[in-house]
Length: 336
Image (cartoon, rainbow, N blue to C red; front, side, top):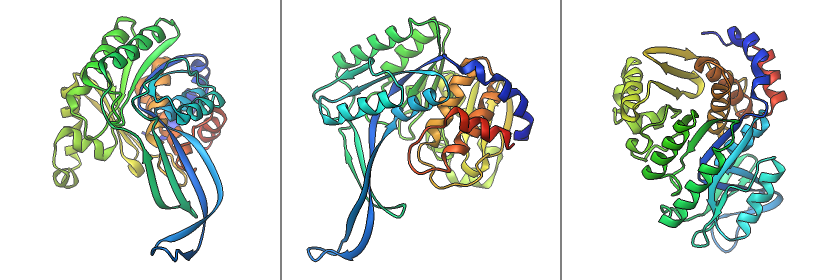
C-alpha cells in the first residue's frame, strides 16, 4: 500500500489520541552523551583524548517509549524499577520535563538505575560505558510492580499496555502473564516490543509484537540464510511468532524496507517513510508507542502501523533517542 493513501484518515483521526492513556511496563534508563573533539593521542596510552564541548542526558529504553506517548498527545503510565541513586533522580527530572508521570516507579536499592554513557566525536562513538545490573527482580519487587500495574489499569482512559523488554531484568514470564491477565480483564490491548534473546514463550498471551527484522529471526529460530534466500520465509517467521505467543497479529519492522503487517491471515507491506536517516536509535520505541496509542484509540491495525511508520521516519532523521512530536507528525503526514 502507498503511504499517501492514509493522508486523510490519519490527519482526521489524530485528535482521537488526545488524553488516551497507555501503560508501559519495562526497563528504563538514562542515555548520557559526552560530545567533543579529538586533536591528540594520550601520552599515557594509545587512545584518543576527547576534549569535551557538550554534555547532555536523554530518556532511554522504556522511558523513551513513554515520552513518545506524551509527545503524540497521549498520557503515559510508566511502570519500572529504578535504584536509590543519583541516576534515579536524574531520570525523574527528565521524565517530568517530558510530561511523563513518575508516580509508578518502584525503587530497588539493590540495583543501580541503568545509565548508558556515550562518548562521541562528530556523531561517531568513541566508547560506551554502561552502568547497570542485569538480573531478574526479587519476588517482593515484582509484586510491587504488579501492584502499580493494577493501579494504572484502574483508569478508564487506558487503551493499551506495552511490555517493553530490554533484558535488564524487569520483564519476566511471570510478570508478562500477570500483565496480560490484568489488561485483558479490562479490555485493554497488550503489545510487546521483544528482546531477541528472550525466550518467545515469555510473551505468550500478548495480542501483538513489533520485533525488528533481526529480532524476528532470532525469536523464531528460522535460519538467517534461509530468510535471505526467500521473501516467503518472512511470512513463515510471522506465522511461527504468532503461533508462539497465541496471537493473530504481528508487525515486523524492516528498516529501509518498511514494515510487514500480519492480521488474521492477511499480509500488508508498508514502505518506509524516512526522508533521511542519521540515527536509528530509538526508532523501535517510537513505532510501538505510536502503534499502541493509535490502535488502542480506534485506528485499524494497518492505519496504526502507517502512523507509527511515519513517526519512526521523523525520529531517524535526528540523533539519539528523541520523541516524535504531534506537530512533527502532522508535518510528515502532509508530505506524503
